[in-house]
Image 1 (cartoon, rainbow, N blue to C red):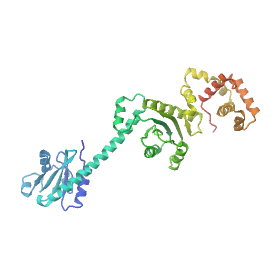
Image 2 (cartoon, helix red, strand yellow; image 1 turned 30 degrees about the vertical axis):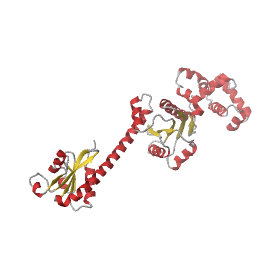
Image 3 (cartoon, rainbow, N blue to C red; image 1 turned 180 degrees about the horizontal axis):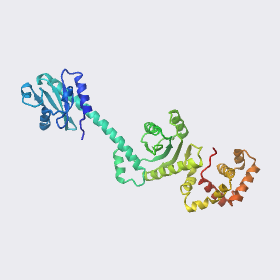
Image 4 (spheres, one colour; image 1 turned 45 degrees about the vertical axis):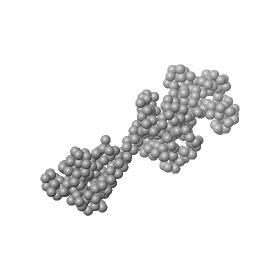
Length: 367
């Protein structure tokens, strides 16, 4: 239920008295003056207002009647209505015949202000509730009742969406600014912030988006994005939740294995992220044993050679050029990889094991 407060009541009084030659009071649903042009009357009981509240009608009090009531002066007292509910009383001080003409006009203005304030409060509540719901909707244990509530609030949980995870610097308000910016430019977006630096953006299906250009626009706005990862479009809410989990895994993978890369797509790293997610599993650790052997032999050069070999899909010349070495040197290094790890990069099964192992191994960045 809407409740008049002092701030709104005093605003009504100040607006009315700016154009009226008489005092105005606003009383709450208990008949207490909570807004007045006479400060000494604030928070006192108004007997005329109590009559209005009791009878749900206009009460006029002339000088003779006022003498028989406590704390009452001549005037017109009108019920303030909102959604056909009596929420307060408006009082205009003066002889009824002199101030009656102002009553309905001031009452209409007051009720318009109350409606505006109620709409503002409702919008604020809907915004806050929507943010709370979004943070729950993307969790796997979200109850169906919240999905129904999201539908009623117009969040459209049934729409196909693409999960995008944006990592921003700590100790800034960038996440809130980016969220507001995206909501304005992409209709039906869901944006929810976690850990203060991670913004989950679930974008409704629409025209294609240039992610590189988008990151440049973030930079122009003064919001330096550390990383942005994207997942293919999800057809329903259940799939979207899984996509958000995959986006978090992809971000973690990117931090440790491709720290210099700011834009990552799951479509490129799906297999790598799958094994990264389960890298601590006993079976996965067994797959990565050959890479562990290279690490233990101080083979950082060999590891980077192997990474480059995979980056260039085994194209010897392109890989050698990227490393700045001769093709024969590349072959020598790959032979050393095979010797130390026990896996030959030229054999399919061994190659797969080396590839998966290196995807589960954080890259050591030189300082």
